[in-house]
Image (cartoon, rainbow, N blue to C red):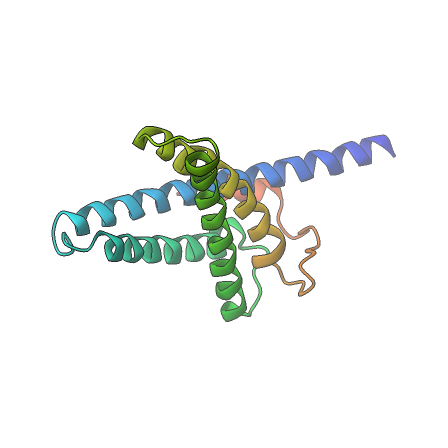
Length: 170
């Protein structure tokens, strides 16, 4: 009984670690896409409209993130309802943005922090970390799930060797 329980716990930890690593890689690439497009737009075609440029860059990065998470990070959990997943994904990203914005608001209006570096750290460091943790669990349990109740069952079709073989074959 104990060896079986140990194996089950080990499998769960390995599966969670793989998802966290993939999620982090997708997030890192999305951050680079967002930053690169934003910088390109504000220094060229949209130099007079930084807010619109940020929206365009954010939309492109968000769509990349949805595709990468759907077809790579959580590929074993995706459902056939792409529209539902996309709507839930956008909703969870909006909540994540609210978390980041809330951190900026607390820093600025509650704690009285006004410098650019303090506000940046509040929104793009502390807020990003909190929003990223929220997004990971939101994607795992509400977005990329075949169970409509939001409480996904643990995937059984994927084993740790499958990802290792996938990575080494590239």
